[in-house]
Length: 398
Image 1 (cartoon, helix red, strand yellow):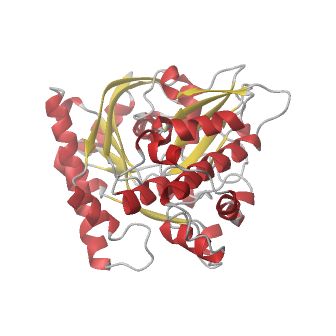
Image 2 (cartoon, rainbow, N blue to C red):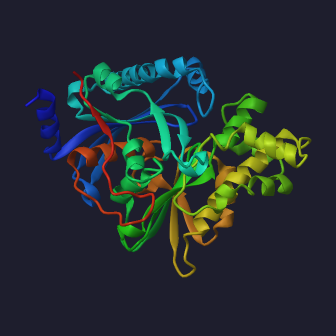
Image 3 (tube, rainbow, N blue to C red):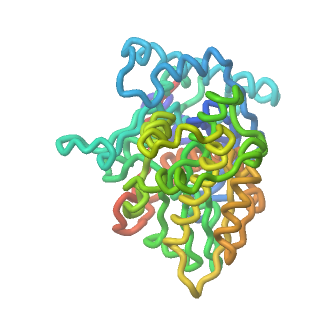
């Protein structure tokens, strides 16, 4: 038997595994690197985050991704060369973290790499009847494995699509294993570029669990801040707080048919981008609104669509606790608006459950890798868009 296959079998049979989870989101802030110690599998999973860091990207690196990010027409050669380049870059960032943490690569069992999403096109979005759901993440896993000399799992979203899902959100799997609690209805709200939530009923019935995108989280806020204020994001919601919500623009933004589509559903910056905002403002002749008012409205737009989506799963007689994570959890204006619209819910942070909100997505990919290597079958029922599958392609170092 090949040495690497033997090594993989040994890892699977260990009582615990040290797995590095990676996440690079649509905000392009940097690479989240979470070193996790993972025991067990499925609902018996016990996870401890040993170390966490966000390694920032250079502006040059961000710009190289933006050249192809969420665009239908691109320089295909640039996409081709970025795929291995991002893998090598991420691999070197891992090695930098391990050196800082005084840990040798051979002490790590697995790397779980999400990669960099460059385009997301579920069938409901591309409307091409002869083609399936699709999504594309680059940052090749073989290059990460060779650079670090650590077995790497990557490209998690493709199996989800192959089994009938849309490739996102994947949080339902890790959220259920790590954060379910009998007797407490939990909603795990993640506000990255796109906002999504996982519904975890207190019954612990896996067939009732699902994850769905709700629409924009920070993607429009960040893009508008970058273009009109020269800032990567609206720090503490300060600019939005200085403006007033324009109700005509707000209702026009919310008129998109996506918001009425059934759960689970996915979307991305391919839909929610500056062209979307420009088209809406032009259609309703709203170009004279101040930039501060537009940003205030975009922030309320995220809050309204998140809150409306959550209300759709709530039963009047039930109590719910919402645990927020992602960059949006750091925006007090966004959080206050959500809290105001969901007065009967307790709104807190995922940190209360023992995992940093900034690390959560990277941690979840470590859980997915653990399930692929050491897990057993988990049945999430027949709910459309939540296939009961393990995910991740395996790359050996040599």
